[in-house]
Length: 593
Image (tube, rainbow, N blue to C red; front, side, top):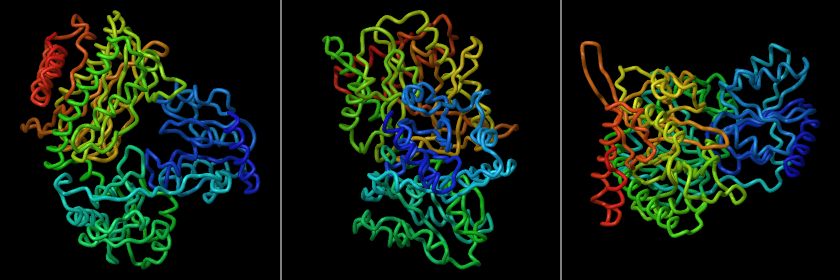
């Protein structure tokens, strides 16, 4: 609390010197990423709130405010308690947007300060337009953080390595040629890419600059002047430099990107995606910028046959690791050993790390016992770390990065005899999960059009959840990727064969329990009829659902059959990779209901 107060006071002193009446501190970096290297964790440093989404607004006078979404309502309330910072629950009808709050609070002639390198082009334009209606100025060069964060972490310096084509399925040269062709379709003769996962995919390179996300802090330019990777040279071993040279890519320092842009020919036409390009970069390009959807996004999202085969193998190894993890958890609890939420996370990481091609976890494990399960993105620490007891529900959301695929799975596990409410809540969630998993839909369908399938049974009982039902998943890349999404708000990207998306409806009773059931699904062809082409989902994840939690009297025969068929498939695919004890354990968990 004292640290936050002191840091906000230092920020306000800089605001006063710069004539800033309110500063906006987003959770962002110059690459518009969801997950950030420690160097850009400014909002976290100022506020103490460590969720991956949220924006801090600091007025010169009055309390600071933090906007975040439903995944973090409970977590933010706890972490902001005792500070001056007010929680603004984004997305609720009575919560104003940041723009609305600023225009209602600040006087005409006031100045809002932002760093244009931390705002996407679209977001900054919307902010500028909203402020202009009240004659509020926008200063886009307000960047005082280095002067007040005296021990700010340096830019990440993790070494880069090549993601072998035997896993990637395509060469970087092939991808770059396709991307440039996509740029030409927009009337451009060059392409600039800021998004770290797109750079990594495009060049078949990986690193560890962002925790859990195997990306390298960099930009890439493809054009007549040549293909240029902007990156710290110290991160590139000799073999990587040689590889980039063979792919036709030269390098320049990461910090040289703007000078390179300024020196480009004024005749150059460069495609930039306003959703993933910082406004500060767009400003540097000026009239040379052509705005349009990145031609990298869809090819990256639609996995090729090599990638899909790799993910299927990664799912098997991940399932084996989960079997061994839950066996150890049950054995240690049965022996009376004290097991905490942090112990669960340690077991999972250890067992996964024993699997071939393991690189890292794909995000921080969520192991929420009892009421902690209702905190959607909960991550236990020394203060919150709860001890498991032989009762109640344990929600485990975890995943791994393997060289041949990324995994993300959530299971809700009963640690004792389930109550009627636990079984009913779990079954309603699973009915929605099954409905989405078995959907057949026409070509061109986006996730928004399918989202209600997963919520319908909860809605019938006056229940719901506020987070999205599904997010895209990368291939040995970010566990959250676009462009597709399954959620209530409109996301226009169509679900397309090769896309891997999560299926994770949930239900959260504050102070009681949380339930979420997540598999990853692959979009595949289903039918061709006189009405067009239809798609469906293939479930990729391989680990059983806890059969003790199903209220079978609430289920149809088709739903029961889906659960039994899925669990049987899990047993059949994992058993050959298990020893006798693990096979027996898995067989007991996959008995038909």
